[in-house]
Image 1 (tube, rainbow over the protein chains, first blue to last red):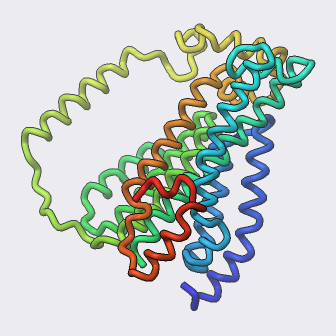
Image 2 (image 1 turned 90 degrees about the vertical axis):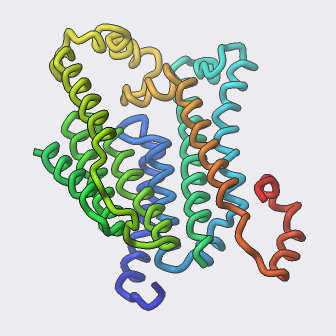
Length: 138
Length: 190
């Protein structure tokens, strides 16, 4: 698609707001609709749009497959790690109330961390699956 | 209205032979479903449906189409036995819906069980304005962990089936072998 100038310019304009919107959905999930799942998918969509317009090889330079693979496991480990941390601090598994001195504050921290884990895993899985499909044609 | 669009799209998907058009209609189907979810005040679900169903899965299906052919090869005939099974199952499901409470009925069992407690106590116990988030991430955190594990497993499964099995030239192969220690878990898949 290297010769489609309109698509390239439009994509260049669109990709940064899409990434920003993904972060907004990620960290604003406590207050409005959204959360880790949606944010992860939107983030992956921005990377996939980049790959479609500028070629998969350049996208592989932006997000190397090995990094994506690492993040697939890292997000899940972050989620499970929050559970282990709450056990070590004397609560039940995934009981975020013990993460801070105040109950609601601890819940806030816990939800923020696990949503981050969800988002990282979802985005990395989507990008990995896309690489799996896109890499076979060329 | 939206359900009508949904039915028209579904029939068109069944009738068409051009797979490119079918994939596109699949995306439209997801987008209409997202509209229905918004109508039902389930914005979080609508969000996911629009992003995953209309966005990513359409792209992945198009990527698959690029590897295969664009038209169906098998001729379509209506076989009587499967058609009968589908018809009976469908009628049974529709018959079942007659017993369901009316949409939005406050006395429905689903609104009597744990939902009132979440609505009352969520603000005090979790302190997050969006109750959907507090149920998803805190009260039902263990379920969400399971969901993320499912996505993780799906990603690893696709990787084992597709990733790293690309036919490589000899030079690339040697290079890949050199890189392998740095690639970590990627070494598992070939």
